Amino acid sequence: MSRRCDLTGKTANNAFDISHSHRRTKRLQHVNLQSKRVWWAGGNRWVKLKLSTKAIKTLEKKGLEAMAKEAGLNLNHY
Image (cartoon, rainbow, N blue to C red; front, side, top):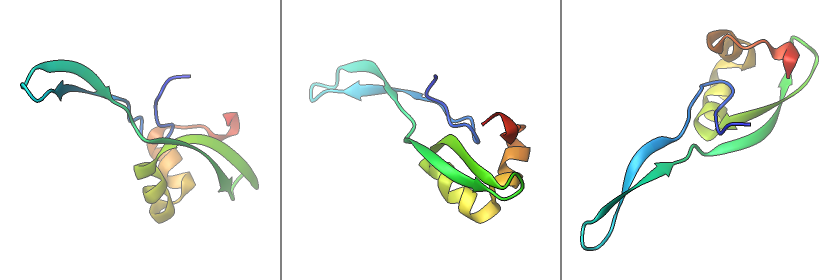
C-alpha cells in the first residue's frame, strides 16, 4: 500500500533538511494519514479508508458520497 490519501490523492512532498551550517539534504514530508472507518449511508455499512487529516475535516463538511464522486472512487470496493 502506498502512502496516499484515498479521497484527495495527497502524497509526500519533496523538501530539504537544513542543518545549522545551512547544508541541505533531501527529505520527504509525508502526509498525515489515518486509517478511518466512515459510515456510508448509501451502502448502509462502514467503509475503511486511509485518509489525510485534511480530508477528514473536509469529509465532515461535504459528506462521503460527494467526496468519493469527486475523487472518482467506487465505494463498493472498500
